[in-house]
Length: 360
Image 1 (cartoon, rainbow, N blue to C red):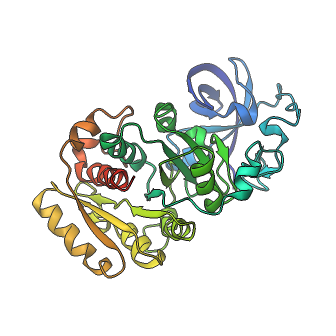
Image 2: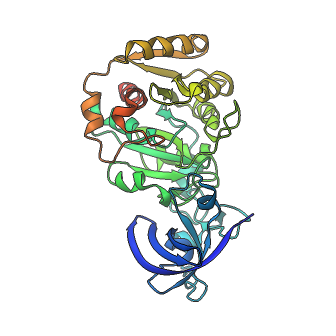
Image 3: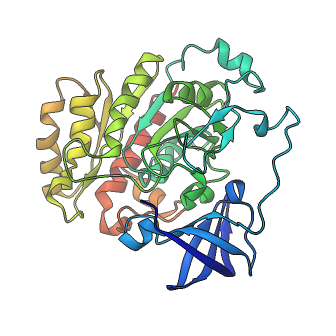
């Protein structure tokens, strides 16, 4: 069920690429709301807005936002389809929901990249780092650029978390540091749109000309606390896709010494499920040196059963702490900052460093 509210925009708080944060007054009192102008238009003070407040009321991980569904008294104009823009596309995302956007797919006939994509069959040995949380993205990027500052790094955003790439303030802050973003499946709003992880990987390699690609879901993952009930488990399928396309899969391990939940201490059970049971092909699993001794022992014990399928790679971490502290965006995972869960970010950066080492 959708929990609906009607409200009036009091003020525009701030904006970033693709999103606008608002103060809205409703019958329940003031709310923080988020609008995506490409979907609903640009709200202004005094506008009436229709809101979906379900996740906010339930206290779910939406960043504390009501979501603007429409500006009913000031609808945006229809896009102009001149045959040369994204509006010439036929790729429907968030399909059969009330806010389904129609985007130009990177491999559609109207796309300027059609010929390149039609000919692409391999990603040419490109290292691809997979991670189960969006929060790993900046740390992996830092790890790549610590040793290869000129490497072109693309981000492939899967649809396990937020569907609009615009929701991510991390992506906004990484603009200029990434070669670009490809949104795949039901996700949308990237620099390029792809229908599958496979076409997304090909687009990252052959259109964005990436040396390394990072694959992770958007922010706001879904989890039930059970073995299989986590959207990030799909990263195991991404490992398979990388191998099918002739890439080099590198698994960023979700390591933690700061998570209060036992199932995530050491190596998270989600990493063990994704790499140990879903991924059917070998991947490199970088293990960072420099972990606190107790955490290091727990990590080694957890990974022992995976050593028969995957390559456990020890990665020196000298310089990575300084690189993480110089990250262009704030580092945070589940509310924990760098010093509160240092092992998590160090492991992600180590995966990036290893991917950089695989470049010719």
